[in-house]
Amino acid sequence: MNGFMYKVARFFQGRYGIDKLFYGICGVAVVLSAANLFVRSLILQLMVYAVLVLAVVRAMSRNCQKRYEENMKFERAFGGIGRKFSFWKRKFADRKTYVYIKCGVCKKTLRLPKVKGEHTVKCPNCANKFKVKI
Image 1 (cartoon, rainbow, N blue to C red):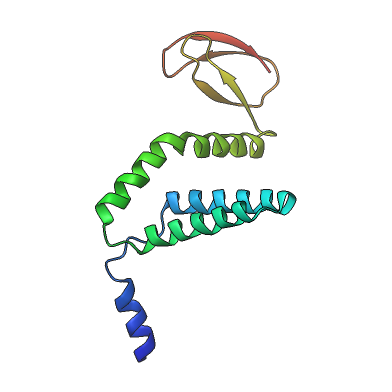
Image 2: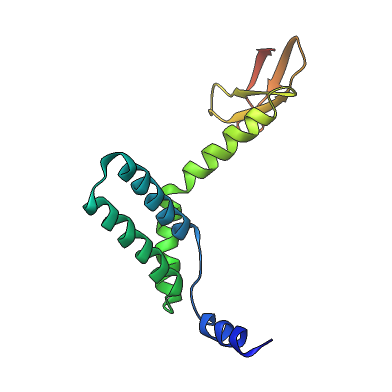
């Protein structure tokens, strides 16, 4: 490793780095920047720069415990959105081979093979038996 790369590696040792909150903050900056394409506001552009500086400062921070706690709060608040999109993506990819049905009692989503006809299904969560026509 040459001298410059060694110095860069030493600089980044002990830094918090990039996490999901970093990507969320950068996403906010992209949305603000896209809005600024239509509005053309100096204040909005300064907000974009401030948000990007915040993201970089968080990534370069040495207070790893505080940044970890911030990221956990962010994931608790917005983690469900990512799981929802992931579920919809999987549901779309499986649309030709599987059918997704909700249990009438516990509301759990069940993935069933796409076989035409009437089937009796037992929910693994609540043991409710119900008929499904596919």
